Image (cartoon, rainbow, N blue to C red; front, side, top):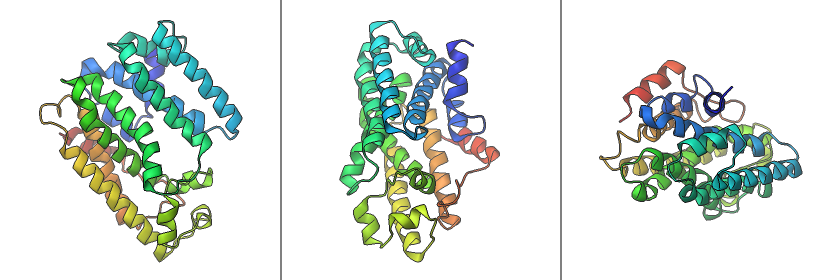
Length: 274
């Protein structure tokens, strides 16, 4: 298996939203975008599928060394080899790759967030940084990409957390800020024990409205001159907005299941996204 095949298998499961969003990318940019999504998946698996934080830190330390090897021109991992092959300027991207890794490392050090400003630091490192890397890969003006891509990535990350509320809680992570849970009188035990209440519904309505508003504002800010080149991010935003609508119509029953769009609906939404 060569590094392209490895990245294709790692980046997105067939039928997933990411799978359909990636298929909207310009052909010339698909190998690099696939490698970036594969790298994110490697980081996610390291922190979210490792029960022992010590092992997780050891694996992330290995990735820190691998990113340094990538910057030095001697990567060994298939994803890093793909990035070496397709990133136009590895040195320029190295700081962002380090920031992305540091964002995922926060998952090993912090399972709760006191308030939204604290949560936003995590969202910026993980969501904003990743979207900026994706945007720069195909942007007509890469130097300006962060100004509109970072807010879009943050909004996508916020929305993703809503759908994963129950699964994350059962794995020891709650991304809803503590002060907001207290305001709506919802406890961590409620989430872990899948306890649906009117208070939980109101809390999730608040979280969903904030994520939706952030997505709509960020999506509207993508320059018209960039939208065709950024069809992967635009498709992700469209798919995520549709998923938030689905979660809302289902009554925010996200504690015991992952609510998802059907594959054919994902394909249609991604294809139409502009």
